[in-house]
Image (cartoon, rainbow, N blue to C red; front, side):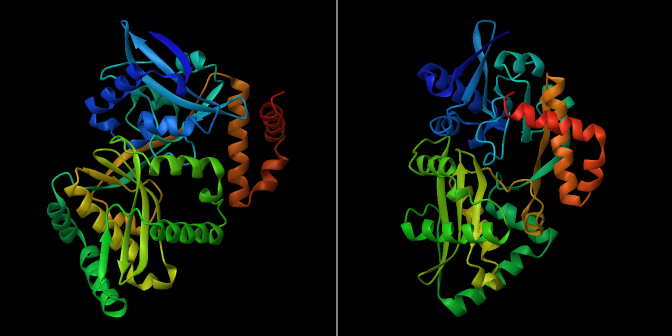
Length: 358
């Protein structure tokens, strides 16, 4: 196997067409995060973005998009906003992850939403989880019938929807809402949520906002950002900025008006998106792997995802492992124990050295 590394923006039309063809040939690769358009949007604002091109028997057989951060840490392309990661490849292709890292000149590659069924990466999984999905491949009516059999989420959503209409005005759902009103409301709600939960504001992060802006103007069927909105009367009550391919909608940036939380408009929005998406070729909505009660109630299937790291440098891999342990200790209140560990202290010094590029 031959592996060459190029800047993502240097890929030619033939290579991009081959990338898209590999996606179309395997439904498991249909996520918009795996598309060349997502990689290119990130690469235009992240200079350290690269793509490893794999050739087998003289034919391009795979694409591995990634970024280099802090000079030595490899991560999936768009790390932090990508909910599906992995290698886009021809069916039956086998690869050696260590050889792949060697070709990319990466000491370590870390992932948090890796497709769980890519077997060559399986030995490097640290943890596995299920990413809940709303499978509407058999039609929205079949999805509703399944959820009605399994619980009361549909009945509750309908009851609260009637209350919302009674109190605020007629419901109006827009599948692809291009109005400034919708996006401005979503951004304000989401930024307030980030502040409440003490997370960094993705919409206030320049490179993320630039990627979003490009994908919102994209007409590419394999990857474009769309805003879906529910209004009550003229008032937006919930909105979602998602990334879609021809058959998958990634649940990306959802938000709602917290003053109207009693109407559970976020759940209603998911149901409206499922209905409109099913009519527009969407096979499933990937809700993402985070734990939330509403996702458990809406899901009717799941996709395996994994977190972990592939390492070919003992020092960098160990340093990153120690850094992870320290962060877990901080979160669980055990930082004192970690700091008193001589080995942890040594590895943390190594972390600082490596991440400083020394």
